[in-house]
Image (cartoon, rainbow over all chains, first blue to last red; front, side, top):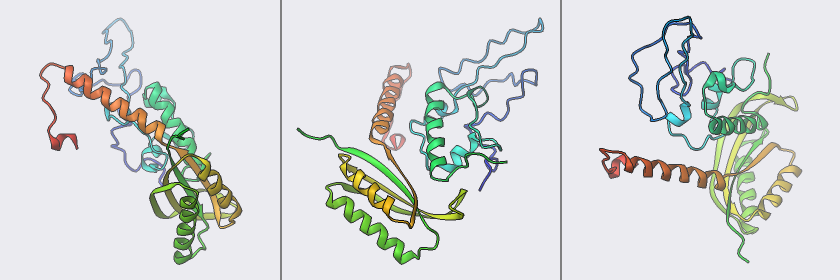
Length: 117
Length: 130
């Protein structure tokens, strides 16, 4: 089975998250949603940058997360087979709930693993 | 009293050893059971062979079949009973989808309403609505 890293440029996953002190992209031309309000970028003073992530599902306007869509769900399960937490995936609460439900259903019918080692 | 119509999605896994003809036959017989109970088949699709994410009873492969049906829920009980009895069916899952779909429609309507309030709004054309 695909381990979820085969389509790396899936728009739903924030792969360019460089960590708290990584380089930042200051050109924000991806502001296409009213909830996408940049970050509270207060420079200097050792205060670390914090970019407000926007839920990929909201951006893509996905209302139903289908449990049969393995290619989509596989993006949210790292190698271990766990569900990617919200703080990493950046999904909103509503979509994370839908995603969790879908992943659990998919596990039930052996579309996704419960655990991998 | 009118029972509301509910929409369900049923996915089940058939043993990989089952031949294609038998699989088709099984699928149609299950559909007949459901329709005889008063439900309506919206979609019946054999999704094909797939490697299982984990072995089920030492089997590593399965044939997936998807049904989508509308009914009041009693058909599901019968269908699930039949599937439980059949040892060729390794696993099944039933998901009620009408509530989620209704919610999705509501979200969509809300988005449209919001978009129409925005300045510089251009009414979507037929092609854009697609």
